[in-house]
Figure 1: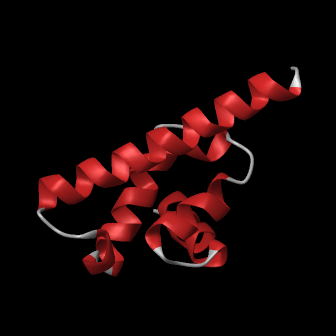
Figure 2 (figure 1 turned 135 degrees about the horizontal axis):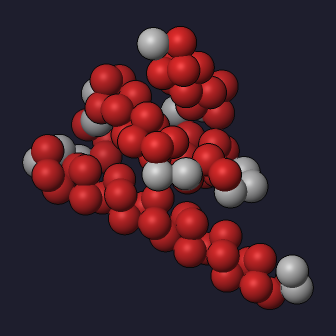
Length: 83
């Protein structure tokens, strides 16, 4: 893939992640800063089901959006896979 099309796809993935988190917050009537640990875990599991982690650096980005570390993102994913 040419560099430009990869960039567009990456931005689109990030936009979809942002949209999902924004919609989740609206639905639950909570700000992103006020999301509980359980809510963040729920969002990460839902994003995983939607294939969000197939994108390069997605875990870093999702962690930044949710205000948690990349390691925490992976821990939540691991928990889901163990259940």
